[in-house]
Every structure is written in C-alpha cells, then in structure tokens.
Length: 404
Ligand SMILES: [Zn+2]
Picture 1 (cartoon, rainbow, N blue to C red):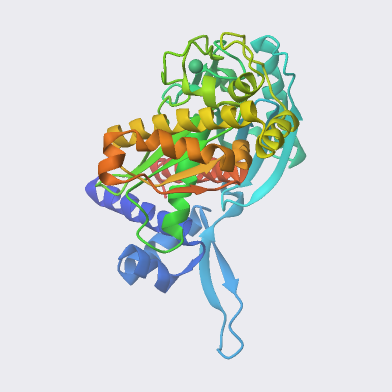
Picture 2 (cartoon, protein in one colour):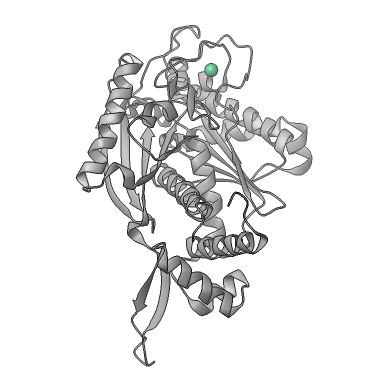
C-alpha cells in the first residue's frame, strides 16, 4: 500500500507523542504517559503494546516504595533498538561517543589530530577508522548504528551533511553523507557545534520544569567564535540555527582572519586575535594555527597583573563580541545569552569591553542588554545536543518505517 490511511496516520502521530514524552521525562508509567500526552488510557495501552511488540519500548519494573504494595511498571525506549554515534571534530582532537536508543552513553574516546593539517583524504580515512573502532569496542554490527552525528565549528550545510568551511580543514570540504555511505547504513547528520550547544540549553530549560524561554543564544569563545540561536516556534517546534557570527564583518580594522577575510569578529576575539594584539604584532600577520591554552593563560595572567597591552587585547575582544551581540539583538530581538567554551576562563577580562560594545547600540540603550550567563561545560552540552537530535531522528524513522 502506497498511502497510509488516516487511522494509521493518527496512530503514528500518537506513537510519536508517546516517544516524545519518554524522551522529555524519562521512563514513565502508563498513567504518566496518559497525563503527559493527553491520550486516553486505552489508546496508551494499545500504543505501548504495539511498540513493545516492535521491540521499540521495554517494560522496566520500578521497585515499589517501601510503604506501598506491588512494583510499578514503567516504559522506556528499548536500549538495544539502535545506536547513535557522535563525532565531535575540534581543533586538536576528534572525539567519538556511542549511545544506545535509551540515550545511555556507552563508550567515548578521543583521537589526537595533527595541527599541521594534512590532506583532507587522510583526515577522512582517520574518521572512518575511528567509527569502525567505536563499533568494534562495543561489538556492534555496522547495521545497528542508525545515526552518525558529526559536528564541527565553522560553516556547515546541514541539508547535504557537507562541511563547507572549518577552522580545522579550511576550505577543504568534506561530504560526510558520501564518505559514510559505502560502509554505513546510518543516517548522517552534520551540525555546527554551537548550534548543538544552543539546542541542548533550550532542551535543558524545558526539562527543568518551566515553560522554557522563547529564544536563547549560545556564544562559544575559544580559538574560533561560534553562535547558536534556539527559538521555539508557534508550532511548538524548536528551531535552531548557527548564523555565521565569528566571520561576520565587525570592523574595517584590517585584522586578518583565519578565513582570509579582514575585520571578522574572530580576528579580534578568537585566541589568535587576542594573542596578536597582546604582543603588538601587525594586524595583518597570518593567524597562528593553534594557540595552546597555556599561552592564553600567560597573557591573561599578565592582564590581571595590570600589563597594559594584554588587558587591552582582552578588552578589544570583548568589544568586538559586544558589537556582534548588539547586531544579533537588532536582528533577532533580545534573548538571554549563555557564554561557553574554553574562552570563558578569561570572561572577566572581556566583560567590560563586551558591555561597552553592547551599550553603543540604540536597541540596547532603549530596551536593555541581553542577560548574560557563563556556562563552562561546553563538551557536555555538545554531546547532549548530538544525542537529543540523533534520538529524535531515530524515533521519527522507526515510526515512519510503518509497523509500529
Ligand atoms: Zn573570518
């Protein structure tokens, strides 16, 4: 049959509601599923029975509270229904993580990268080997991996899973869908890393009870500068984007950026930009490929001891970020900003410049600056974003496959 009857579509939508409730609240009893989804008790019974038969859900016996009688049955996604791999590409390492269908993290390891930046083919080969290793360590068959979710800083084309420009590979592009297609049946996703952070922050806020905020931004500080914006649409869907913030033109100041352009926010606020200003190196000097944290710590220490140029370098970085955020507020409206990434350890040195940059905009002077908080655990947020999106895709695919 090519088209689905309306009864089948309703059933599929109701099943999606049940899975979404389990993703949002964790394992739930029959009564709680009915309460969270608004579905009738009989409908919930029919759906859970069907999803159990299809090996999508499993029953867990929750030990009864000491004072009460028999154990309660709760439902959860069946752990072995499928697996997701998350691959995080960063300037110095590639991190591989494996989770099961219940969202449990099973394995995680890192492989070093050569900063010198070899040819893209070698990098692609290393990625394939890394994924093989991830499956082999948990004795998984390649067919059990349903999603491979890759993230990088830079510009990505999520529709085709193509990395367009990245700090790691520059203009050398990788088509991840094509790279994995021969070996893996898994669906392949490519996301900008800070987009995943914004996604995870928005999801966390919702899970912590309240309504969540209508919009929030994540600003990642480090060697490169990333921005993710999460907005709740009227339909209830979470829309997350990663505008090209780090390479947005900030000022015609002639500071050479890693992307080859001049005057990008990153050229002032990225680690190499701060280093260049602190050491009074001409602004058109070719940016350092990688600046170790220990080097940045030294400049920060000097700034805190009152060294004028080091202080000034962080202040200029803050100013560029403040100008950038004021433009974001003008374009998207005011929203809370969570600052994350390795650069948060120098945030105290950038804060004054950032506030100064923000306060120069009319929008901010009229309606106030966005509330800014520091959330240092970037790696955890990136992984949460990977898994949440991967599991949602697995749910959609499992339900769309028909029976269930
Ligand atoms: Zn740039």
